[in-house]
Amino acid sequence: MKGYRFLTGAVVGALTSATMMVAAQAAGYPTKPIELTVPYAAGGGTDLVARAYADAAKKHLPQSMGVVNKTGGAGAVGLTEIMAARADGYRIGMGTVELTMLPHMGIARFTADDFTPIARLNAEPSAITVNVDSPFKTFEDFLANAKGQPGQGAHRQLRHGRHLAPRRGGAPGEDGRQLQPHPL
Image 1 (cartoon, rainbow, N blue to C red):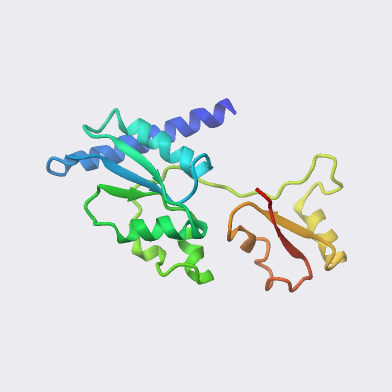
Image 2: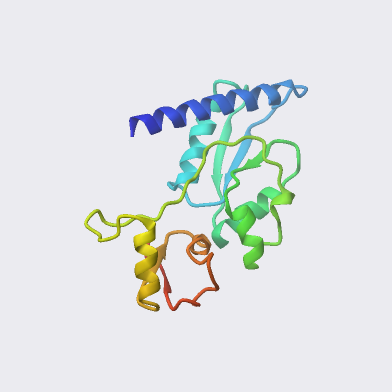
């Protein structure tokens, strides 16, 4: 965990420095506070990264950077507000994988091409995990079991759209497995 914190701090610090140096080159920017929109609720991973970034920005900007959470529609509400904001650098936002997923799911009227990434703050790897006592020791073990018992399994998700990865091999429900949204 300490290594993760160090790496996160190093990445945030480096990206903040690079982003802020470019921003500082613009004539007098910023002259007022910057709003960093997070399209998800406070306390989640994206929110925590945004708050770390805003905190690190204090050392490099003459103005504050405040985090504002705009929730709804699996991120579509906040992302739509970011897209519609004046392109003056005073309203920026956290983009996540949902930028590419929501348009294909019919939830949003934007595409990833409607946004310009200016800094990568972190990488969000996904993993399939099982209890340590599970008979599955590899992903191949898991797949063999699932294929041998069609309709007998389920998977859970925490965020809307994350179910697409397990379904990549076929249409939803094609293998008989059911999606079980994780109760929060």
